[in-house]
Amino acid sequence: KQEVTQIPAALSVPEGENLVLNCSFTDSAIYNLQWFRQDPGKGLTSLLLIQSSQREQTSGRLNASLDKSSGRSTLYIAASQPGDSATYLCAVNNAGNMLTFGGGTRLMVKP
Amino acid sequence: DAGVIQSPRHEVTEMGQEVTLRCKPISGHNSLFWYRQTMMRGLELLIYFNNNVPIDDSGMPEDRFSAKMPNASFSTLKIQPSEPRDSAVYFCASSEQLSNYGYTFGSGTRLTVV
Image (cartoon, rainbow over all chains, first blue to last red):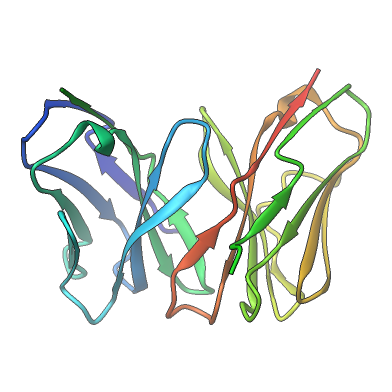
């Protein structure tokens, strides 16, 4: 059974810092991995999708990498802003097209 | 496209009552998923459909929960009878094709059972 772990569970940084969120998974036989953002009381917004054949994806200040063999993905946020404050969720899609979610990293960027 | 549409946004009901949550997936998406989110357990997959057929319902907590997808544009999740421990946010998501594409989530239904 796939298990997804996100570290750290919470992170507080001053504005402007570059930061890295980590995601690890136990079963490397994945189809893709998706990073989501969730604001308090809101739904999930897809940020980046990395296919199993890819090593990274970029969107603006966000960069996600995937190392399937080691079961790891990282989400890099450059020049963080207070508007980046949210919970970031990593989700792995493997057999049967079912997403397994990590517990999330709650990010607070202080002005 | 309006995205995945869920209704109602909020539902407060008394224990023992029947609750029905609704979802309209993105047009053209052939997979639909129901998730439940709680502080204690995070996001859990309840059931998913492919081409309107339930594929895996192993996440459905018990017989009080049932889900249907009568056509490609509509799905329901029903809880009967509801219990306080069912209080959670229920999300619906859809995807275009098995495995190779990302999910799009609805805004969720916040259910409170008192």
